[in-house]
Each structure stands twice: as structure tokens, then as C-alpha cells.
Length: 265
Ligand SMILES: Nc1ncnc2c1ncn2[C@@H]1O[C@H](COP(=O)(O)OP(=O)(O)OP(=O)(O)O)[C@@H](O)[C@H]1O
Figure 1 (tube, protein in one colour):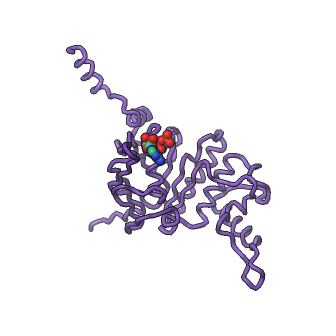
Figure 2: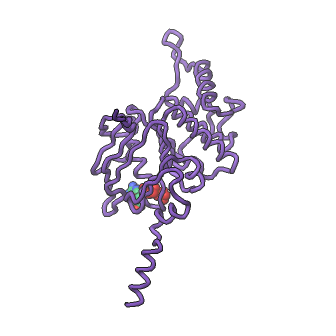
């Protein structure tokens, strides 16, 4: 009997983005299945952020399509991506320092009391829901009422990821979630990504850290100068091969050919 591969939850099809004379992305395609972690890697300026911004509706592509759960979405902004089931966690705009964990989790989508009770925020319900989400993902915050500025980097990143999960997205995009974290905190965030995966969500992660990529990613998409130059599967590549694909370093055969050319030159 024929086996049917389930359709990808996210498909990027032949996407190109230009900024004036710069081709930030050229004809890039990739797909992500539920319960899968895909890492986007590449040197500075390779197009990783532009690709994430395009998937999250911030950047409109000049060509190509973003397909979520089999439907093409012409996303005009992040709200369209959110409605399609895509949430993005940006490294730098993750949390408001002066707000506590519950306030950060519900920022912009606070649960309110019914109108006959005065439409004030329903702190008790928000705290209950916050505890559920944090515990589902095994994120440990001792006191959810202290300002987020007092949390560790790993806890902050974890809260930012939990915030994205409140909307129950099918796809979570993480822009360098472990950048600037110490060893223990990095481990904590990688474990959290594993739990998102176990929940059946598709995770796309931008990372410059090859060790993290080797540990967490089921597949790796390599971008160079706006083009997809390689796609490899967990266990099917070495660290050096990945770096060579990212930097465009010459392989042994290419180097030999160049030497010969120069010698004859
Ligand atoms: N808003 C913009 N206006 C003009 N050029 C841009 C804009 N955003 C990105 N670019 C250019 O597009 C190309 C891809 O940039 P992008 O930020 O997507 O790369 P990246 O792989 O995320 O790099 P990094 O790892 O340094 O963050 C670069 O040449 C960059 O200078």
C-alpha cells in the first residue's frame, strides 16, 4: 500500500526579496513538518532574518509564496501570520523589563473581567493560565510577580517563548534564542525547544551556534548570499562541512582545480 507523507505545516515556495539593488533572498524554498526543528544557518547577511521576517509577515516577498497547513497566505503583517498559526520570538524585543512574568505573558492580550465587573484585568485567571503554560513547558519561575529584569537570561528567553505559545501556534520561529546565554541557561532553552517539538509544533530557529544546531535541529537549511545552498539532515553532516557550506569555502577538488589554474596562469 502506498504511504502518504503528511503535508508540511509550513512551506516557503520560491521566495525572493530585494532591497533596492540587494537580493536578500533569491528563489528560496523550504518546508517544515509538525514536530520538527529546522535550523536556518548562514554567514552574516546570508538572508536568515529576511526569511524569518517574510514568514512572519513583516516583510512582503517580491516573488514566491508562504503556505501554512496547505493554504497560501498573502500576509500583510504579523497579525496575519499569527492568524495563520505562526508566532515569532525575536531575541531583542522579547520582554518588558519593568513588567512581571504574568504581565509579559499576556502583554497586549490581557484577560479582562466581564463588563458587569468593571472590565478590569482578571489577574487571577491570567496567573492560573500562566502557571499552566509555564508548567506544561517545565519552565521554572519562582515568583511570577517580580519584574522580568530580575530573571536570568535563560528564564527571560523561556518566558518569551511561553508568551508565543499562549496563542497555540503551529509554527514557532525563534531568532537566535540562545545568543548571549551561559552554558546552563542555553541547556534550559534547548530543552524547552525539545518540548515545543514534543507538543507537535514546527520550530524554525536561526542560530550561529553550530553546537546548538547539531544538538537540536532535525534538518538544517544553509543560506549563502540569499540563496539556499544546502539542506542537511541530523547526523548527515560534520561541523566542518556545515561551516564550508555557510562560508562557501572551497572543497578539496575546487582548491586543486584553482591551484592548477594559477600554476598555468
Ligand atoms: N531593510 C533592509 N534594507 C536594505 N537591505 C537590507 C534590509 N534588510 C536586510 N538587508 C540586506 O539583505 C541581506 C540579508 O540580510 P539579513 O539580515 O536577512 O541577513 P542575516 O543572514 O540575518 O544576517 P545576520 O546573521 O548578520 O543577522 C543583507 O545584505 C542585508 O544588508
